[in-house]
Image (cartoon, rainbow, N blue to C red):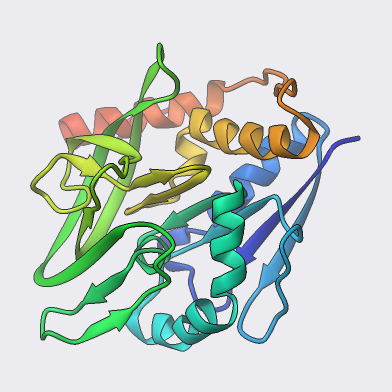
Length: 252
């Protein structure tokens, strides 16, 4: 039996807007395929070695919680995480977790917070928050694009470095900065997004992509996920899309 180990970073500190649901979605869609799942909670003071996990998840948190974990992430676990990212370990990060993988976060009062610097982008805070239901286009592969839905609530404006790919393109909402139409980042097998909500339960194609990338890395490039029934997840997404379009809740 195949096994996947999901590392949930700082679950005691970073869990805004039900972001833990992303970990649960990965676990549920693995178990539907009879893949054994281990969820490993990794917080301040816990050891981390390369090879400990197949997928890493870092969620969002309030500033006070992020300040508690930032030194541990950057100075203690940082070198290992950067090596894991470069070697192709799968990471999915949301909001504050996404921002922390960049070069720095500059608050609206001018204070600069050093971030991990694993990927070439930076974030600048502004007083106005972006709070919206969101719709994105995601290129699953060269031939297939899927519509994704989410929810954003952030004051940071993130700007990707030259040649750094966004995760998705904005259809509705603000995304990274409200200017260039980009949302999140995709670098090797690492993905970052501002979308809370949770994002993965409503977007099963992305969940499966993360799983398949991790399992290919572990068991070989000829590994492919078995198909499963997506009806419930896709109905939830359709209901969310109709709500965003009309402002009215949909029965599913």
